[in-house]
Figure 1 (cartoon, helix red, strand yellow):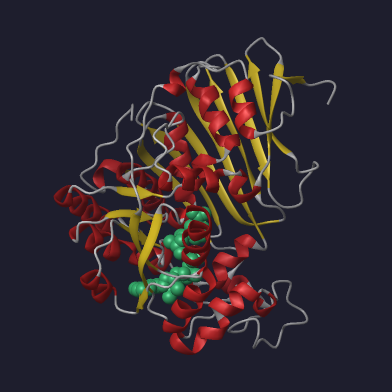
Figure 2: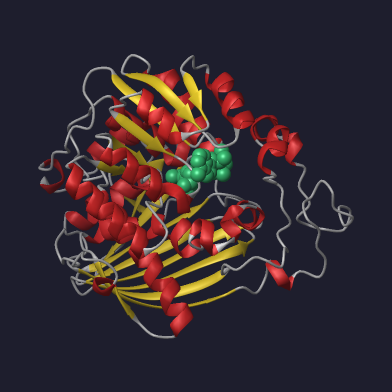
Length: 450
Ligand SMILES: NC(=O)c1ccc[n+]([C@@H]2O[C@H](COP(=O)([O-])OP(=O)(O)OC[C@H]3O[C@@H](n4cnc5c(N)ncnc54)[C@H](O)[C@@H]3O)[C@@H](O)[C@H]2O)c1
């Protein structure tokens, strides 16, 4: 520690305090204003009451924002999960297994969409056509045809679509945005970005509906769209062209033994991936207690032969402003996290997050800024719960109508579209062996300055 040069006053008390105390920031960040999303007490309906809908967009909202938000309807196709979710959140509103009936009987200001990825388009479009603003979980959708249909629906309705890219809101990532936008390393010319999912969280994608392209669009879309959104936001540019490789070399057909799901498996004692879902009370209440309604197995085998997504992926992405990105995603790493480096005309920013098996005491995350011909400087960002504290900041912004948006963190329909289109282009490139131009996918033309 003593050999390092810390920018500011090393580990400061709070993320907010640190963000404002670091001296190398320009005023550019302060100029932007976000559009207000809600005002007064907002009438909200939600479709999709799985763990995300019930937790982040149910219990957390009711606990922290019930002075601003009133739930008027909840919908899920699984009636058991729907009732369990209602009880868990503590809501009294009406529940529906039929979305159209919910929308006919209620006039929500905001529709929250937290269903399986490939179904988002149906609810976003119907919600827009019913005159609602939409708050959708990422990915906005899973292919370019659905993306175009959402863009068209938004245009004809004049309503707003917010994509809940919570990753943008972590203070560690806002600091990176601030450093880049303050010109600390000159013009960014290229980025090395490598993301690691571990054998617990990463494996979980291969247990569930995410394992099939038709439901989650592959990890290129379901997971990497988070990362592509971060890139567009950090670089202040939209992607132009993608070339990618992908393979499935670890999960799926590669396993030496397999079953249908962990609970019924005869290889429980020898499989490293054996997992007792019922040890998690929340999952038991939402999923295993309600299997009889839809047959959804939350603890599916990671070696099922029907898995058709990649577990090893890499892409070269060219942005409209000329920045080149080398990106990779590995889904069977011993630890979870990422490494990123921005190469600029005046220096380089390195950042890394290690979420499992941490190498330090877990109190802060670092960013290293090195100027050409200069020294290395380290910035420490205190850690906090919920995607580094980002989840709460995003919810405050949405429900408390926080107008200031100093780091341009609000993600709109265009951001949501370019994030998934990067993934769709990568997926298509893996299949065709050819580079894919983003402009060929929908009527959106990538811009160099967003
Ligand atoms: N931003 C993040 O960090 C983050 C984290 C987790 C999940 N998510 C997103 O949230 C969404 C939900 O994820 P989850 O983990 O809760 O999944 P889940 O499968 O547990 O829940 C989805 C729910 O939608 C319901 N559903 C599916 N199709 C439906 C339909 N046609 N009509 C009505 N209900 C339907 C299912 O029955 C289920 O209850 C996904 O889009 C996912 O990408 C985002």
